[in-house]
Length: 475
Ligand code: FAD
Ligand code: MLT
Ligand code: ZN
Image 1 (cartoon, rainbow, N blue to C red):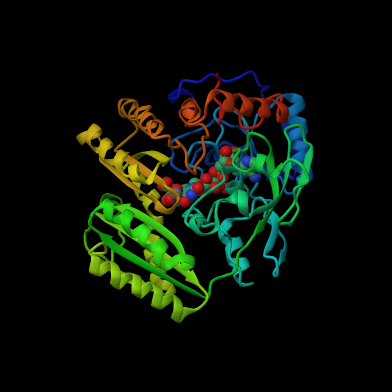
Image 2: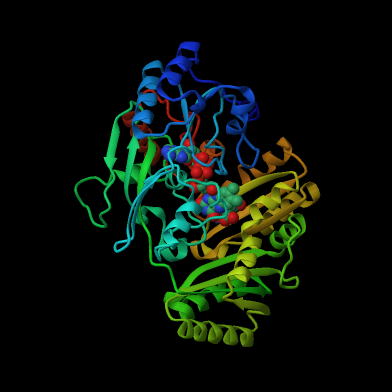
């Protein structure tokens, strides 16, 4: 149990009683109140099987009004609630710790409107990201974010975690792309900031409170997202590189040479790719190299874009920074290459257990921690590997072992966070704090900032019913 593994005590919330279940059944239809142990189990376990809660009930509201009534009731009864989207979160925020009620948003999955001229999409929070991307593509638009979990994660979960992913380099983070939000406060009050305006400086920008607050300040029920135009010409380069210094030089050169058409710049070390290819039985179009780089371009004029990309390729093959590579514009081939990159998170799980670190770090220090960890962990672990979003200064470090081990955990934590703090990095670049990291948040947030976070929590959720044990440390 997560509570046992992390030595934490249940707080003084109400316990769910039969009349509570009767109330929820009177509010929602019976099939949207899950209480059978086998039905509830999947909602208690997170994607990396790192955290497991003990909830006895899952509620699946269909409307904002239902969310509001549920929260108002829970607030009066001091019943704790864990908001849940697609349950793909990587820090244990999406599953209960004890018996919190799971409030799962998957039945709120309607698209409300799309303005093809401005690109404003309005939808319910439980829409799956990939479904939204497919929908807007039919209207020559794309979603401003993309991640390996797109087939399961919800836009409401993306907003609540301020998800980054593969397109952040091009379209910025969600604070810039989310035009409006409707959210429900812990006491059931509906906050309607669901505008589709690009500009709206009427006082405090309240929508930002819900972006990245991981379900601790409110439940996001609807969102308005700005969707950029779909690029007519897209190409993907996949390159073998000899050293990390060359990866950095290539990034600088790609920004200079490709300019406005550069849409993604990802890296993975040899261990990340070789273990993924091996564990997931994929085929790697390139031989073995110390590092791999993925460069995507998206533009509007194929011949212009190809010319730029080919000029860049010729220059960097001559300079020796690219030792081998392939460029393609064929959708099936691009999908295969992206699939290798997007399979890295899941491949680690096939080793048994993965300790995951998601850090922002100055680019000159970007890869140091992988080398430090390899030395520190030696043959106590199966693998240590790094991959991530170079363009965002965000590296993911996975340490895989046959199974969870407290000894290994103690060797990794807080060591990793101390190293990150030394260079003023962030201990969570894009995955959030969730249940796994509140005790380490002070490595990235100072005391006054943490106090303001606590004040906000007290103001928005005075009974602390929303996603307890997450994000904020106890003291
Ligand atoms: P969940 O996992 O269900 O919840 C995440 C958090 O948000 C929880 O704290 C939950 O309480 C809260 N929450 C969910 N919905 C709501 C709501 N409607 N209102 C209020 N709170 C809510 N993340 C990245 O940033 N970049 C990546 O590139 C990336 N790649 C991934 C690849 C894979 C294969 C996997 C498994 C995960 C990846 N993630 C990535 C992590 C994860 O997918 C994101 O954090 C995603 O945004 C979570 O969305 P979700 O709907 O699954 O939310
Ligand atoms: C990614 O970039 O693949 C994700 O953030 C998931 C991970 O860190 O494994
Ligand atoms: Zn990532």
